[in-house]
View 1 (cartoon, rainbow over the protein chains, first blue to last red):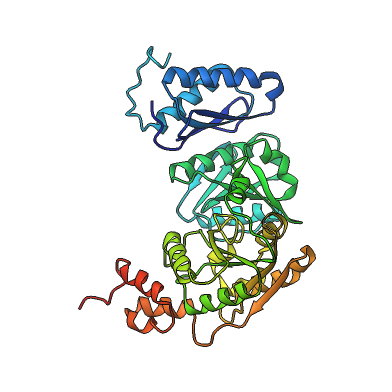
View 2 (cartoon, rainbow over the protein chains, first blue to last red):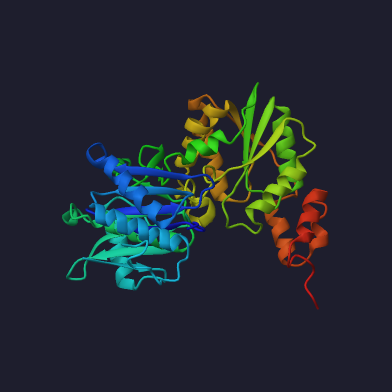
Length: 99
Length: 329
């Protein structure tokens, strides 16, 4: 999945996260900002990387501003931002890369 | 609580409530918002607001009795989503210094702070990548920041004089849009028009010098309210972060007989810069030449008459622009 434009998903509200995905040339770069970075920073990065990996996103600059989101929220926000960043037609392959 | 985003003018009642809320938070409507977000409670009364002007989120306020409910997070989220939808990804945020911690936890990083204002940006390394992209020169270094819309013989006179007063001169071309000529065109005019001046180096100002984020009044151009112009963010960002990094010790500007806003800016530089060890030098302008006059002539289709006011290179570039030729009969 090639990121062709900058897109955002999510909010800065409590228990949510805002995910921004921008095109990049070389590899994945994830920037995380979270009040609970010491407790859950590693896990958030894992969830984001796994999700991007499953979507086949290899080159992107990803910014996550976390406000205490659960794993499922992080996954959903990353997926949504990625879909917007590839100008997806909306026909989601449920059960495929999105599961 | 609900949030609505408006790109059209507010109703009279909304506007009144909005101004009252801003006033209660010691803020002022700067009148350049492209979008306004209003948060209302279940009774429909206004509890929070925020605006997007160009790339800058500002006029963020939540009424005191509604604090602690996460209203600011919702307002900021909706403004960011709108900004992205409009293709504006690099965002600045202007607020009171007291709010630094709140917005730091919402993905914004401080750029510069004055006594009553704080400018933040949504990139951790935004300012650093700008300043790192500019080469360092040695000796006495000076700086000129100019819009050059378009680049005239007056600008050339200023830059040539400034370059003669230092070992190396940084010329920053204003990158913000909102002028007659696009930033890339103005940059080319300045580069070509100063190519023969030794030790003069031209760069884009990015959005860190004279932009709608650092100095909105310059783009609002409300000359009547020039006494209210605030340019401290712009001047302090230059004095505290840009000048020290590039070893700049002199800032040059042309004398400003026409625009009260620019004149107020020059006056403020004169007051502030010396306390940072930077000399401010105002240079008398060439009589009879002004970019404003050139723009008027172009607008009237009198392109031939601008020839004596602009360098040959500027003239060529203007002729090449679509729609700049004489009006068709």
